[in-house]
Image (cartoon, rainbow, N blue to C red):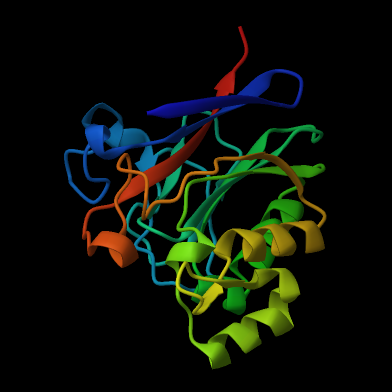
Length: 223
């Protein structure tokens, strides 16, 4: 499991983890068995709903595509197999705040990143930063011309790309970056691994996988 540690505020850090095949299917009830009581994984619906929680484990299985919290010890996460998992954190607020977002093309079109940022700002965040997790690359993600045109309207021309055989494709990572920058979120780190080509991850588009990996975030106290 890949782990990234980032400071949030004066007395806390955020721990961001990204699971791999070897860590098990994030849809399974045995996934992170030792942390099930602290874990909130939503039932993702490719929408724009964001859940704010105040207790570890609160809202597990709620239909939404993002979770935010200021509660140390709560483990919040989203599952993915091609869409873009994003971790958000505030490094300048009086209290630590973190969020996780599942950003597929429907969610991006529906405003899921906008809604996550809005929720964190409402909760009192300072300047926000983001870590972008593994996702399908543009060369592996053929996309319909009409839907691609709609995404250009939302996120700009940088989302337009081509597959290896020259078919129109969507650059999901570029779409997420455009929406983050639109919301004044600094991109702290990009994990440039394609889920359709990297055997460490499951891919629904590339391999027809039903399993999922997860991006997880939690606030920890600094010793």
